[in-house]
Image (cartoon, rainbow, N blue to C red; front, side, top):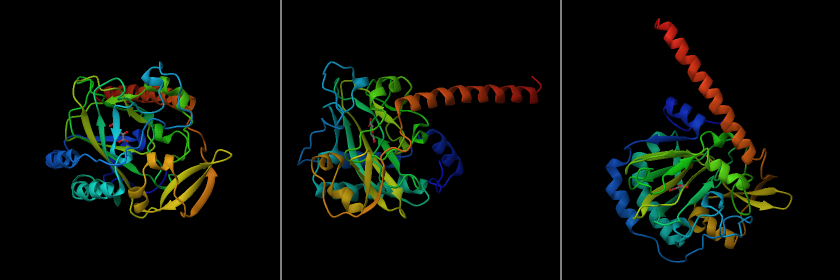
Length: 322
Ligand SMILES: O=C(O)CCC(=O)C(=O)O
């Protein structure tokens, strides 16, 4: 993975490039109450069904959630459920908070998309492993999803902790937009077996490369759990939206911040706007991020890292004369 630095701190940069995610415990504690009150102004308006994420959506209802390709009905994301003016209001309300907690982490990034995420209790509140939409040309630059936990969210609480597949942002390159079914969809159940839970407390912040696979199991507790996510892009980047066309190719549209205020993944699935310039036509997946490739990567990196770790421990012991 190449491209300009994302984080100001070189150690953050190194770990983020390696793992595709990085936790900042307590980073948002100072703005937590403010964030909670912004989130409490729940969006209303045009509700866009979240039922059909991908064309390959399963028909059978009896499959386990780990095999499901679209979020359950008890998972809600405000981006898909509010009117453009509400997206503007949320963006304006969140701007000072992001300026305080997130922007100082990055070299020169700004928030492009803001979402309130709610996982209601129940078996249909799972969120499948997925990559976030492509908002910049990831062949040259990267976007980062900043996830702010409003509650303690953990395995111990059984309220659907976030899971990530470490390093998966480095496995293949796929454009993610409208009519772009990912290549890993048929292997979700096995991939869940490799995903790592990230337990957090309210006020913790997790940064994720938009291409790292992440998702969350159902919320088995008795209360909803909330989070706010912002997708951050380099200020210098041309914002894009990918639209799948015949031959497993995509049109890459050049868009602006307003595009993401007026449209959401759900509204774009229903109706595509016209008039945006096509700045590239290119294969959707090159190379594809298949489940097989992801599993092979997990296997290789875990065993390789394990061997490295043991080697370092032996060298350290030798140096200390133990
Ligand atoms: O809250 C979650 O479980 C996942 C959030 C997510 O997928 C995102 O912010 O992109």
